[in-house]
Length: 100
Image (cartoon, rainbow, N blue to C red; front, side):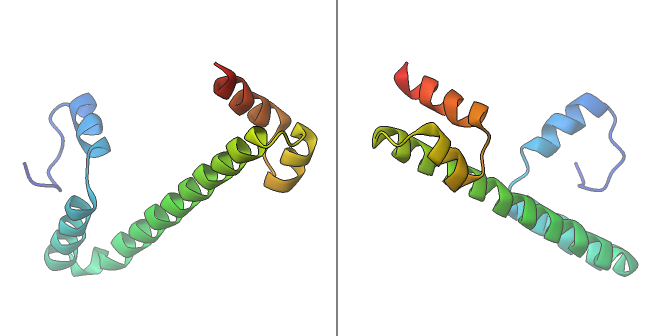
């Protein structure tokens, strides 16, 4: 199936797109910029948005790791909230999950 074809079954297509890898995305960018040079700027904007989203996801994962380490060290939840910027509920949830 070509990356730019109209989906025949929308639900299947959505699930397919969730599994795209970095290599797939690079092929899509190449296909769009080759086939539709006028769309290359839009594709690069989308790529930049995806990169930013990935960085944000990484920051969130990093914060959760800090919370876990802080909980293990017995640091008070209020201080963890202050240091990470996460909500009290988020910190408490991580602590509960670690206790189970």
